[in-house]
Length: 362
Image (cartoon, rainbow, N blue to C red; front, top):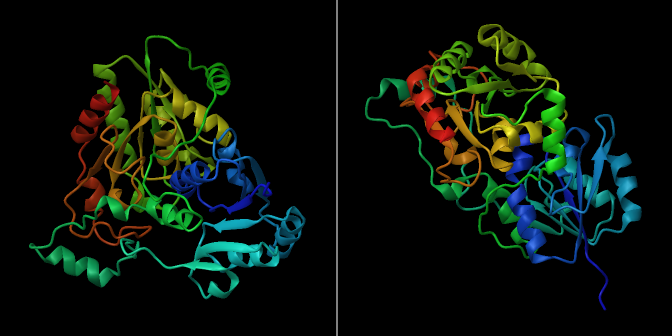
């Protein structure tokens, strides 16, 4: 009888990317049901993999832990193969120093020699290139230019599926999935005062860690909430990380009663459970957007500087989610701050978002 395969997944550093990688992990588990799959992840994302059906074990990397220290911890484990999801030189060096015999990752950043199976970029891949100001101005001056639209095959989840295919997994896309338990949901309801009554629980996530270009104006979130309240009996839950506390605080002052502010107050596992409780989440394009869709909750998302075709929530084409964009010729620009007039976001009206949220509550 052959020895059981032991596969190390070197995880990514950002929440949204981690969620988009879950289809690849599920396909790998499907292809190798007897393998032991271990996730090596930054500590801040370790909770994401609790109860996940594709992961048997989690190894956390602390922020101050260097590449040699990580490799020393990995070496005695005698992994048979590793799938390196990030493109960085460091992550390939970690698994090379750990002497893992079969090392799969993208051939990028001069690291191909560290891998036993360097993988070329997919033909359908679309780089998320930051547009220079000169190009933005040129596009805005041209009336015959339309916003960039990409096929579903360009979505970033294919980036990880393509890698997993090098270990024998199917590259056929499936929806991202993050697991929650009934006990976690019940605990979140009790801890944060979200009882199972007749009111809908609607989440609002007004921040975006990448920068202000991804944030729909805060006053519009408030206007949407006020209008929604006229149509449905709901309770608002404000969400976000430590950097979003100020945004949520401003909204809390506007919304008043029937509003719970959880920004900066939840662990990652608690955030998963709260998102599961929500009927719908109105959110910018950021990590919790991907997380909400992955636990099965509908999302409404104003897209501006980024592309829903490349990094939208859930499985591309899933009509449960409402992805809104304006007819801005300079979008997507992938910039942190808008260098012109922010038309990609201000062109998405309160009325459109209200209609989308109400549709998603049905």
